[in-house]
Image (tube, rainbow, N blue to C red; front, side, top):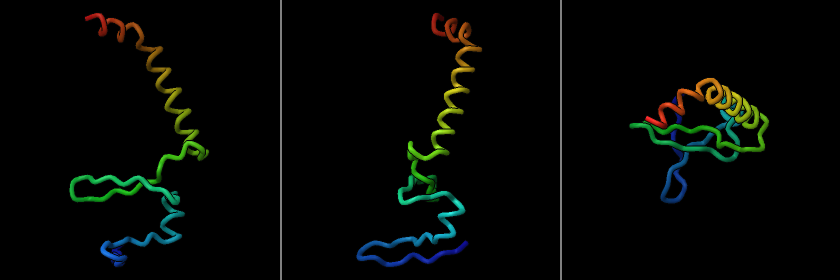
Length: 80
């Protein structure tokens, strides 16, 4: 998709359409990262959003499983 930047004062802005927001899940706050010569825009992590809570729960479960499964190995590495 090709977009044209809009002039706002001394800055330029990218207009994100309603359809783009719906397709990406972006709300009114975004996270912006520079990766090489690319600008990456992702939804801000809002702890109250159900999908964020679900993602955090999955991460916690996976972390606990790995720590439990490899507890002896981690202890050996720490003692080495």
